[in-house]
Length: 131
Picture 1 (cartoon, rainbow, N blue to C red):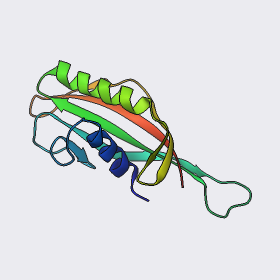
Picture 2 (picture 1 turned 60 degrees about the vertical axis):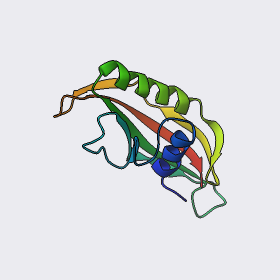
Picture 3 (picture 1 turned 90 degrees about the vertical axis):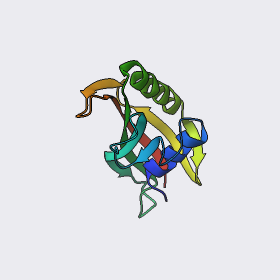
């Protein structure tokens, strides 16, 4: 099974949010380009078990999205668009894995400016997917 950011990053790229490695980055936020998005895995919640299986049946990973741009309105607009797109995930199969939900934990908010005077907006997501 792919990591959650591999699947979600590809899903964003397939739906016009940018190209992996050019505008969408996995696991890190690079120094350039100025306008980009990073998906970074964070601590999820425990997987879920049923009484008749030794292994869990559902995984609950989480990740954060950071949208960055020199213009605060553009960083916010991109973060809001990704938030709305991912919040609408309901029973979607990505790379053979069933994603029940990709639920935002909160609305995108400003992290302020980075060391290069670029604006960053952030949002966390909790995923429920079948193992």
